[in-house]
Image 1 (tube, one colour):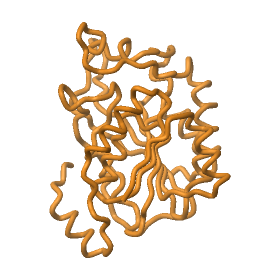
Image 2: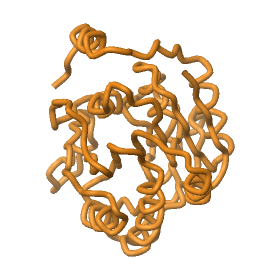
Image 3: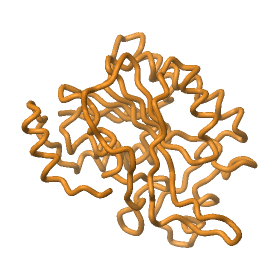
Length: 257
C-alpha cells in the first residue's frame, strides 16, 4: 500500500489526473468554503481563537476561504466536476461541511455530474456554545456517487469528537475514526482514495486502517510537511482480500454510534 502527498493546486491536479486517465474509488475531503453567512474568517487564528494564543504549537494558515457563498459555490462547482471525472464505478464522493454551506455544496454537486445521495450528520460532542444560539453540535458530510453504488450496509450517523490538545495537528483536523467509518461503504476491491484538500492527511490515516492507497493534495507547504510526516509514521494495514476478512475486521472494531 502506498501514499502520496502532492504539493500544489487541487483543481489543476484533478485536471491532470483526468488527462492521464487516473481513477479513484472515492474522494473524501474537507474543502475550504465560506463558513459563516457574512463572510470569511481568513486565518485559523481568527476562526479558532485558541490558535492565536502565544506559544501555539499549531501552524496558523490562511484557509483561502471564499468571501461569500456564491463564490464558494462557483469554486466548488469546478472542483467537484473535475472530481467526478476521476471516480471509477462505483465512485463515492464525501464532502465535509457546516450547516451554512449545505445549499451551495448540494447544488454544486448536482451541477457536477455526481448523484446527490444524502446528508450524514456528525455529532462532534465538543461544539462551542454561544449565548442566544442553539448549540451547533453537528457538522455534516454531503455524499454522492458516480456510476452506481456498492453492496454494503452502513449506518448514516457519525459520532466522535474533533481532535483536541496534543492530538490536534491542524486547525480544522477531522476525527480519523469518523473518516474510516465513511470508507467502510467502499467495495471490498477498492484500492485508491483521493483527498484534494488533504490538510494533515486524516483521510490518509483512515485509509491506512484498510490498507487502501491514498493520494492527498495540499497547497500550503508547511501543512503538506505535516501530512507527509504523519503518513510516514503511520502503519499501513494489509489489504483485506475477502469479505470474511472484512467482516472479521469490522467485528473487532468498536462501534461508536
